[in-house]
Amino acid sequence: MKESIDESLINSKTMNDEKIFNRLVDKKEIPICNVLGVDIAAINMEWLLSYLKENIKSGNGNELAGDYICVSNVHTTVLSYEDAQYCSIQNNGLMAIPDGGPLSTIGRKLGHKDIARITGPSLMDELFKVSTESGYRHYFYGSTDATLEKLREELEKKYAGIHIAGMYSPPFRALTTEEDLEVINRINEAKPDFIWVGLGAPKQERWMAAHQGKINGLMIGVGAGFDYHANNISRAPKWMQQNNLEWFYRLLQDPKRLFKRYLYTNSKFVWLILTGAKVKSYRKKGGRGYDEKTKSSNGS
Image 1 (cartoon, one colour):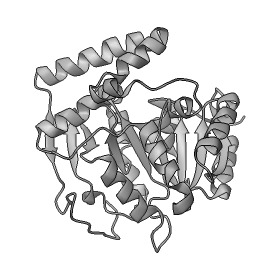
Image 2 (cartoon, rainbow, N blue to C red):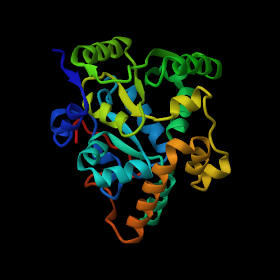
Image 3 (cartoon, rainbow, N blue to C red):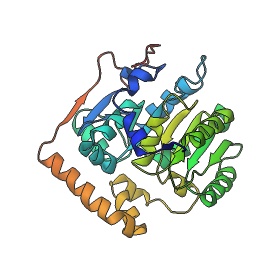
């Protein structure tokens, strides 16, 4: 009988991840704001792009290879509050960036004046724009074959010279152990710098955690980012993005799937914040600010 890579396997790889994975960079460099148990990176796009540039193409190669970034919002933060294992997955990656506007708003109220929203599609756009000059290679894991085909066409049209190392649409079922190893080998043979994971939350975060240290590139979970860049769906107008209303625009686009999620998670998030659930701001001892750039070879 073939063994399957299922949710129980993925869930089991949580609490001890950082002991297993030998991180080459020091997480203490990243300022954080803890919101309902999740260590949200108190950073902005400029900071993140500089950090990635410094470490992806370092003199020692990709120092972020094998690690992952969670793109966190109200939905994933509430899920983390309710599920200790999922919270551990959010916290045991390289960082959890503030995709949700309310997360950056809370960060600013707690003294992180430079924290700003970083959405998955926007991060993709910024990195795609500098891919040719930076020599970045991209792999796309998730979605459907039809969406990946459209995505390739749109990216090659919009970002001249972008290097797409590979794409793979996994089947809508649990992979066998043999199939999972095949996927790992397929990705690693393509030698990507970034692996964009579009499986949707919480599945994509669980997948990245299960493959931490196995994939030779930096994994970033971007949810609907594939659909945005394939032009399957459109982004909210700038004024809605700037006023934390992009969730409402998405709700109008896909009410059947998102209504119950937003009604529950948004309401619960507001309730938890208003009733004083634990929200704290801190920078780990030895952490770096926005102007200071120190490096350490000791993983955290």
